Amino acid sequence: MSRSLNMDSLVRGATFAAALGLFFLLILLPLVSLNQYAVREGIGVFWDRLKNPDAVGALRLTLLVALAATAVNGVIGTAMAFLLTRYRFPGRKVINALVDIPLAIPTVVTGFALLLMYGPLGPVGRFLGERNIQLMFSFPGLLLGHVFVTFPFMVRAVGAVLESVPRSGEDAARTLGAKEWQVFAYVTIPAVKEGIVAGAFLTFSRSLGEFGASIMVSGNLVGRTQTGPLYIFSRFNTGDVEGAAAIAILLALASFIILLLLQIVQSPTGRRAA
Amino acid sequence: MTVPHLSLEKIRKGFGAKDVVDDVSLNVAPGEMLAILGPSGCGKSTLLRVVAGLLRADGGTVRIAGREMNGIPTRDRGIGFVFQDYALFPRMTVRDNIAFGLRVRGVPHGDRNRKASEMLELVGLAEEADRPVETLSGGQRQRVALARSLAVSPSLLLLDEPLSALDIKVRERLRRGIAAVHKKVGITTLIVTHDQGEAMELGDRIAVMNDGRFEQIASPRDVYQAPATEFVAKFIGEVNVLPGQLYHGAAYAGNLAIRMEGNGIPSRGGTVKVLLRPEDVTLLPPGIGEAGQTRASVKSVSWLGAHLRAEITTEEGYSLTVLLQRSHPMAERLSAGDTVRVAALRGTVLPDPIGAKEPEYFL
Image (cartoon, rainbow over all chains, first blue to last red; front, side, top):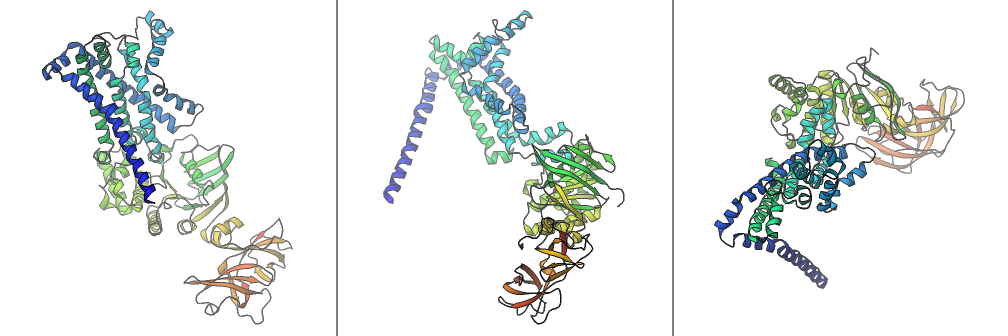
């Protein structure tokens, strides 16, 4: 009895130790070294690197694209979640599976596909190009890539909440005289608010770090379509490791704060406050 | 009946290949409370949702106050609906829940608050007006749901199993509460329930539903005393079902005679089903019997407090459940193994085209 119990606790202890060890080796230590590189020459130099106009531009663009992608997916992702959970129609399962495609394929493939379709060589790109609209290598192209890559987050976050909200609330509103938009605005949206908030945080955070699709569709134009992660990549490639690390640590910190906020919002006490 | 306030004509509704509601017609008089009673899955809730317009019927017509409702959305039907799971709006106070219907209709703030207060008074929740609904008990929530549905002054109230999520004590108290509110407001009401006690107490009439159809629509008294079908008899209360023969204006189950009560059974000979309520069978000391009585041996006796329940087997081999009042002269000394005489005080006789079967009895 006690022997097998000891074995059990041994196995459990080893598993925990392995999990913690990997966490340190793979997540914490690299972040620490990133930090060391960033501030190696002192806080003043670190600060100067952040104030570099190209860096500021890249950070501002990252922020703008992330906000825009969150707004766009906030609407179409919520609509898609609503469609998938509240209606039964032919092809629902196929669409449901397709929603997760951006998680499964490499983002660089996503960017490549968008480029082939909407770039100067693609059918849609050519059509738009003849009308002087350039989608790729511009903000709209970048946004398109980010919307695609982050699409599943909003759909899944809202869908999970919607699944647990009984329809009788919506029906009750109808029997009380509410028009369909009132049902949606006063009953459905408040009920899935948590899902929308969680989805928004995840979308935003994922967009901050998006690289693969961005590098394909943006053209990596300094000061115009270069986002934070692309700036880091360029700096590293030109040997400016400290410059890359400065922005990198800032982006990592931003993501951490967002995810921490999400934890707080989703905790029971946070929910009560909301 | 006067002009019905609600009239259903040949309503049909199916899901997939199965008809859940099958050609159902019904009239409800103004101010009447009609209970639709049936086992779960019989189609009663589906029917209610069709009346509300939450489901579209495959066929038939719903009329409310003479107006045809086909194609009219739920919000314009002038109904109130109370759901089994309350369906209150979370993160809203009691008052805001009750005022919701007035708010979406654009009633000014002051007016809708006044109306909400009036409704809170009606259901006895004036003290709780500003509490969030999450903090209420189940019974209080259902009272809020009732007040909310009445706040928009509907002409028809639809209650879908309003009490079945509550525990028994609360359920009985709230049942009386609903009856009182109905009496005060006088609104035409359709209540769906699987609880026979609820249907008996609340319904002016009861429509017993089975497998998508109405088996009988009648007063609680008639549904109990003169069930139209074996299903109705078994669903409402306990009943003994015996095979019988018609003979000279009476039905006989063996030697046991049941006087016919003019329920349309031809008195010429034939096979019938005899339905006997346990309290409509009485026991007498053995001795010399009269015609129409039979002998039986007592198999078991159990005391239920106000009543005594005996399981007996007649000399013809029929098993019967008998319910005696505590004050019945035989009650005090009856015990298993006794021989008794049995008489039927009243019973229902139904045609049985399939013919005599093995004797059955039901709990």
